[in-house]
Image (cartoon, rainbow, N blue to C red; front, side, top):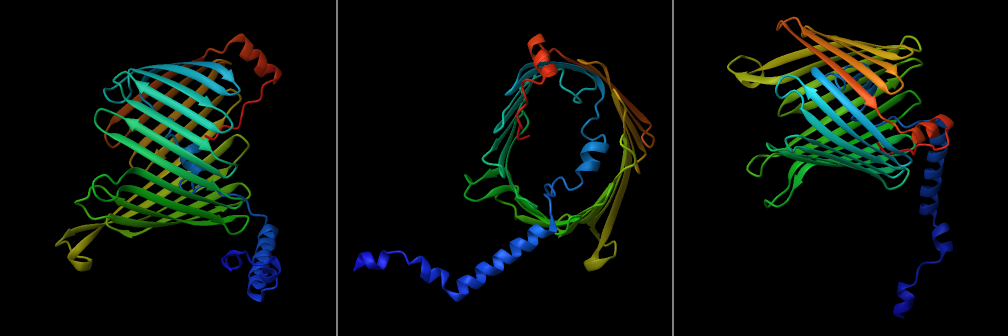
Length: 362
């Protein structure tokens, strides 16, 4: 009798059930209409304006002082290389010496960087399957340390991410920063998403929660994005970006942001407190030539920046960077040289195309 109770139901009873059939037919109809739309993956919510912030603008490329870098590729498949970097500049701007190593295969990406003062930065990405990637970022310094764990699930027309920064439960409760985001393509051109942030710095402080909304629209040769942060303890804000490809070698981008923060009491406004407003605007351009790339950027704070990367020889690249702050009457200049010491065997393999580099989960 007990075996009869635990026995699974016949497949016919499930298939003939009216409710189950209705749910299955509705789901199959939804999938068919979804496939008919021809939607593509929109990327992550964090990089909703990646064409402007990561490609055109100088944020990830700017430096000051003198910099010399020597790269030594050891293998092409899997990718393995080491590098040494010497720098000279203003105190605190760059480390005098940095050693880094990189390894990459179709499933694993590992990168470690150590500076002369003992500071260590480590990154590791692991691809569980074609859709799920786990990213870990650890930073150890004399002043502070940081640990970040992120999981990205890439669907056919959406991306879901879950990230934790400095998570801890050893003090009798949960603290840290936790971020969940989702970006979904709703038409071939439009993607909508949201991001939720929950953070608690210490157990004796109250937790804070923030919610942001985002939209991304892709045209034939332009992309526009909009992000809006809902009201929170630090106020609210809105930012927009616009990227356009003028020619095959020229692209431009703009970024506008406006922040609203509660002011001090006694200044008027809602509930006795004023509303402080702060806005900024930036515009940039990127020119790609045969053997060089030039970027320029100007913002509403009076800063004018430019960066030129030029390949002199197949293994030698020179970089010139400059920034002028008209309001502060300050100027910064950077010059860098990068040399890639590839062995003859690797150069011969690259020229013949015999070894194909793996798709590393960067």
